[in-house]
Length: 61
Image 1 (cartoon, one colour):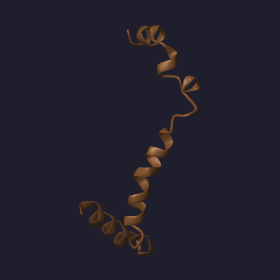
Image 2 (image 1 turned 180 degrees about the vertical axis):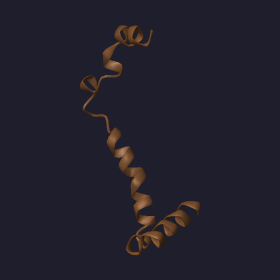
Image 3 (image 1 turned 30 degrees about the horizontal axis):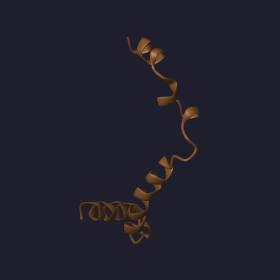
Image 4 (image 1 turned 90 degrees about the vertical axis):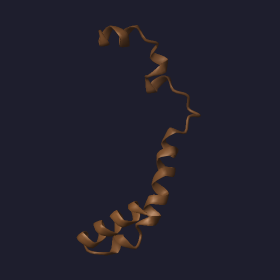
């Protein structure tokens, strides 16, 4: 059933080869990680347990 549905579907909707070159999907992922990376800068220089605890506290805030 699933195979038949996929084979009958329009490939331009799910195949990356047909996506527009003007789409900026990857930048959305990067925009989400920037604030996270900034929030953990101080924790990254600590030993692993302290670093993970610092990241946990930053996420909880």
